[in-house]
Length: 313
Ligand code: GH3
Ligand code: MG
Ligand code: MG
Ligand code: MG
Image (cartoon, rainbow, N blue to C red):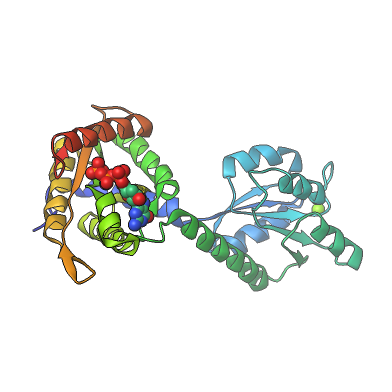
């Protein structure tokens, strides 16, 4: 069948899929409280919702922030040495953490404390002792919003595939895994041929429709563990774990065959389109994403100068 071959060994797919899932779905909460029993309770209540990291000594905050890279921060107000309000203000003044959701856990619920919590930049507060299901529900909603915003920021709205931002980190993880597992990794770059003419002759909306269909076609033709992304206007990148350059060329060439047969329609006319592509692989062409991208892009330009409508290793 189409694109069923070459398949990587099953253990490779088993290794890649949880990695892709973890990169995309599991959020991290960093909880800071000087009372270990509160931290234990928080861990118990939030573990089904997220990866929970706890910190008892607020002086270790910056280090914990760096290592956990949290999607939400849960702070106690009263702690020795540093107040949670202070940590919150500093977070809000740091460009990296300006938009991270911050929720306070506080036993002081007087109007003045509540006002100071929000003035420091908090999104929400929960009274201590907390009710487990209520804390879980509040955090779940915040994390759901984080997921939604992130997936919007990482998805190309026109084609529905990942954009550059949404694919770079996953590609880098897969490359690290390839190095660790001693597996190859192919990176393909494809660019639509003479696409400017489609826009000029058939209109920008027709061009958009072509891009959307090409994105869907690529997504459908590649495996779920491959990474398909739109990196530029009419340029797509495909990352293929467990594949070398020759495998990558074969699979992109098969996708090109399907694209050649697609009929597009605009202004009562039907037309077709082709693409040119280049492929590079880890480890022969490079060990990091920028190097592999440059090699694949250079091969793609060779495909253009050789007459387009082809994939070049
Ligand atoms: P080549 O085969 O050498 O790649 O020729 P080309 O015409 O495809 O390349 P060129 O770089 O000259 O033109 C790319 C065109 O793609 C120009 C730009 O307007 C169009 N484009 C880029 N992004 C979009 C988009 O989101 N929608 C539409 N409709 N057009 C786009
Ligand atoms: Mg305290
Ligand atoms: Mg082009
Ligand atoms: Mg281009």
